[in-house]
Length: 129
Image (cartoon, rainbow, N blue to C red):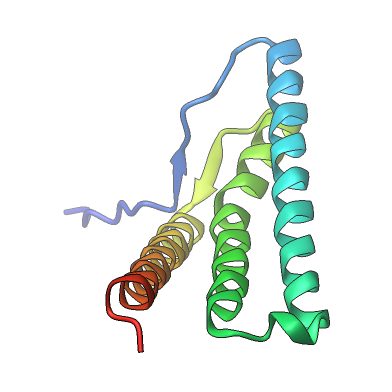
């Protein structure tokens, strides 16, 4: 009797497009979005880190928000761009699990920072010293 030794080693992702021209268009669009996010969040991080006048609690939270946004977008877009560029559709099981874990971690941390920032503004406006 033969034992059942099947296991999942990779997943197939849903393709954004079937034609090569649309896949390349998706790659360039995703690359533009990724570079814009890198540039914007990098400029925020650099401005807050370099200017000593911006070392206040709100800008500290803004710096953390920019870094979390970089982490959030860096978990999904590189694999999507690679799949669009190289005409592949697979992702390993460990890669998918890591991607989901990091995305949920960065996403929940980002919303926690937003909640803390909103509470900080609420206290500053409604209950001033």
